[in-house]
Amino acid sequence: MLLIGAMTVYLARPGPRLNAVIMAVGAGLLFGSVAYDLVEDALQSSSLLVVSASSFLGSATFVIGDLLLDRLGAVHRKNPHGKQVDGSAKAIVMGSVLDGIPESFVLGLSVLQGGTSLPLLVGVAMSNLPEGMASSSGLRVAGWSMARVALMWTLVIIISAFAAAAGLRCARPKYWYRALKY
Image 1 (tube, one colour):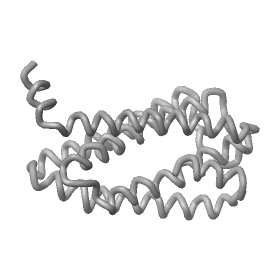
Image 2: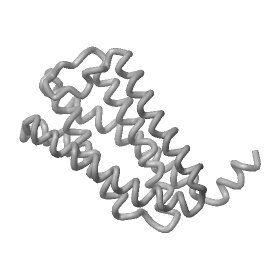
Image 3: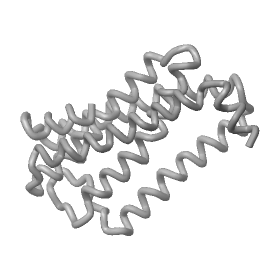
Image 4: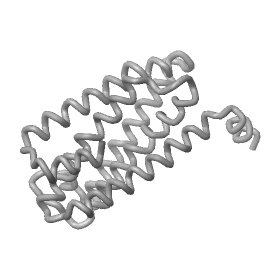
């Protein structure tokens, strides 16, 4: 969906208002799928305190990562009007990888633990559409070619695929037994 979002920006050139609506829908879908699917599953195997603390730590990681990217000069990395700074593409890739690794890892884990939940899969997929659109629209206005943006998103997709494979690997009981043994 990242590539579809990027190609949509280059081929259809949606305006900022449509981008905002798509981003809001994507964020709502992702939030809903996590809140109603992953948290419910986590509460079945852990206490409310552990799930709450884990959710807080995950949120704090994203906030701190975003602040660090801003301080490193990437404050305009997703500006749809093209106010890009040097390093914006690196910041977009780092932010997308920071987002993509945990969600891909969870999807990989869930495949071997009874199948991937359809709401979670749809939420993750649909949240990537606006992510690709928002990031790519600013890069398009800043003069980035469609091929360069597609290459950037392909890199993020490959890294996320490795995270999903790691989730598959970690879901195997023998692997956990060996990991705990050391």
